[in-house]
Image (cartoon, rainbow, N blue to C red; front, top):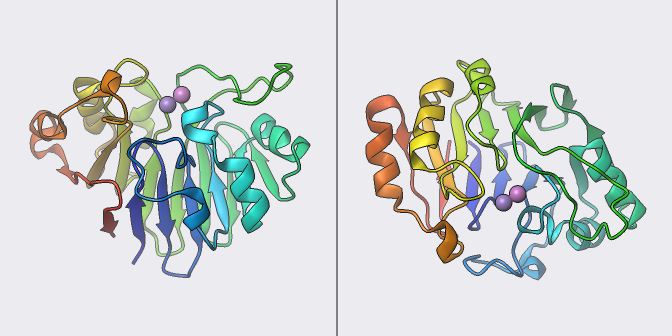
Length: 229
Ligand code: NI
Ligand code: MN
């Protein structure tokens, strides 16, 4: 069984049944709703970063340096981390996949913008992505990143057991668009993210559940809450 823990916003820890510890979109120390601070993370093997905005990337470099975790992201974002002293990185690009010890990771398209927090010279342009993981157990997890609703999500149909979708509006999909995405992807379970971090992206997850209806099970987590699958 894999254990997925939400830290608020788009930040999740995934512990696989073969013992890998994976952190998505590290945003802890400046995340007003996070259940933990970055210093509380002791062991970490992999950090998967969807894009370079501060609310997905802020704790990435310090955590990678302290824990020795490998940063997995787009080529440019990984190059930026390595230029800042991160030892282990694995650069990929959208549409490509790679077999890691815990399973396969494929970078999926995400429509969003793409600066990198901390890249003061603007030397590392990058496109945002999402992640499709196929764990060694066979379970499949989709982390959407900050994407808008895109027709490309239909290509994920039949490939996703658990989908993590933003519902906060303003920067990402709103609950209506995310419910349409559920119809495209047809996951078994959907977990909403990227909402209620700040007033600007306040949403009622019960409304999202109502909009999804019987298309998927909507699992609403509180920061610190886990879903086992
Ligand atoms: Ni963003
Ligand atoms: Mn964001």
